[in-house]
Length: 265
Image 1 (cartoon, helix red, strand yellow):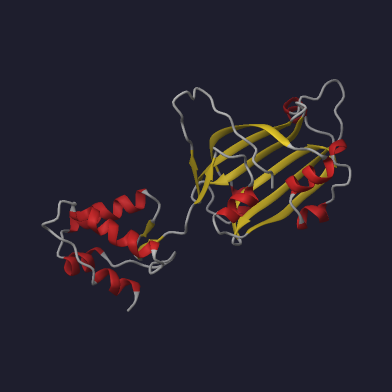
Image 2 (image 1 turned 135 degrees about the horizontal axis):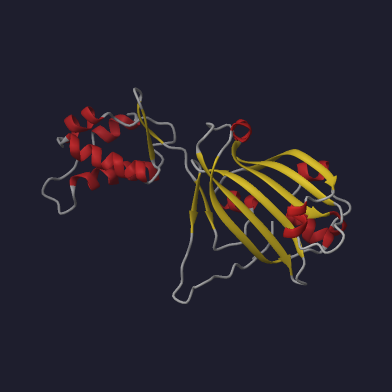
């Protein structure tokens, strides 16, 4: 029995206190949680659900609308309604670590180094890194970050070269930057500051991220300080909005919040 048949053979109760649309939502979610429904599967049409479950079209539409709002399904005109690919959840209660986050979600992280150069920083980069009268050389690193081979974000990182003179493109392609900074440069993250802005993904970035030009995304800028108070990292990322969800925890005394660095990458 395939997933469509399992859903169509389910039952809802008109006598239950739970609304019919929510019962249908629960059927879909239950089959998702046990792995019967998977990303890319098509769910029964509105007409099929109405006939099989003996519910109205408005009830079906309300349920599908709720599932779509949660990002669990996607409607494709003329084709039907499909189970969505899972969104990446980046929690800003923890220190940013793409590798650790992906592994915690059971995904396989990977990176493609698009650019690696030793250059003088731009004026904006020098200001962000709080360089004084003279600006030392920096590494400018552009990486495509992926989960299970799917492009999620394009990341540009700028690091003062004197912090880690042995850094090479080859090492970045096979190792974790944070691990190398910690173990070989003694640079342990202590405080990080991130700013978030909405953005529209342009054509050149869309090609790299393998998404549609003009979709919404996030522009995130992060600066990271060591325990000595030195800024050792400036990172700017363009993140696909169709694959990313941010979660923020607010506490009772939280006008601002701290981010603890619990083990770098």
